Image (cartoon, rainbow, N blue to C red; front, side, top):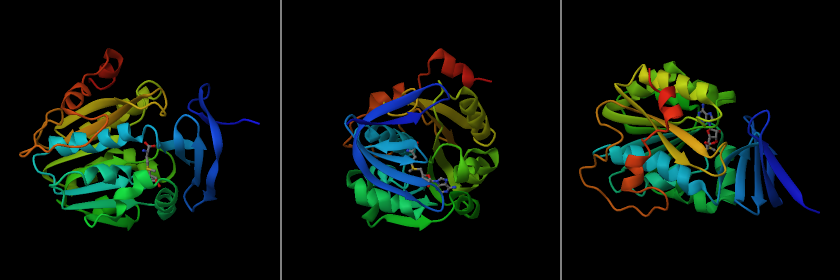
Length: 276
Ligand code: SAM
């Protein structure tokens, strides 16, 4: 008998994968956490039925959410990740020699535990000595941090449940205050194809606070429509440019200098979403 898993990406479209089995299924105080093994994408982390990351294509998302802001900053030393409990973004951040401290602020300890147990190739950076893990609400942590971080990466679930507040103008105002005076933030901001209004609104919320706001794109096969948006807000440095004082060779599979620049080239329908 064949078993297939479907993520309903819209009311009318689903992505269906042939599965080899279920490795974990539990309910935390925040969400249902599932890890399944699939033929096409390997092991897959699902939260409330939504694909968070897969062993096969996670490199695209994690490299693009980490290396674009870190290479746009001249000298990133202190970095925060809000959400990101699977650990993939942390794994990429600690590839940067300049980083002295990477703080992971995840609301749900059980996501970290699930990833440590079932996705070791993604969570492997969590035990690095530069990493601090805080189990708390990222909104509160950022509200209480002033002039603290060089880069803040918002690696959240979709805007439901505890993640709703991570997409608001008020939160991006707190992010601005939590950054140093040449700081940069980035947030995963969903599919411009299926969620155009969300992309437009989130971009506008970031733009309310940051003098430089840009959207960049990456192709992530397991995410809705494959076309994924990241909104970046910078106080001083153009995020489309690699501004590192001492550029560093990074071992990557998707990200490189050409991709950094090209990711900011927007198809016309996306450009219109973020053009006033
Ligand atoms: N790459 C993923 C994506 O785009 O779907 C996101 C990965 S990561 C698993 C998302 C994490 O954000 C979840 O583990 C969730 O618990 C966490 N999260 C949601 N709201 C949060 C909040 N307010 N503070 C901290 N973490 C939060």
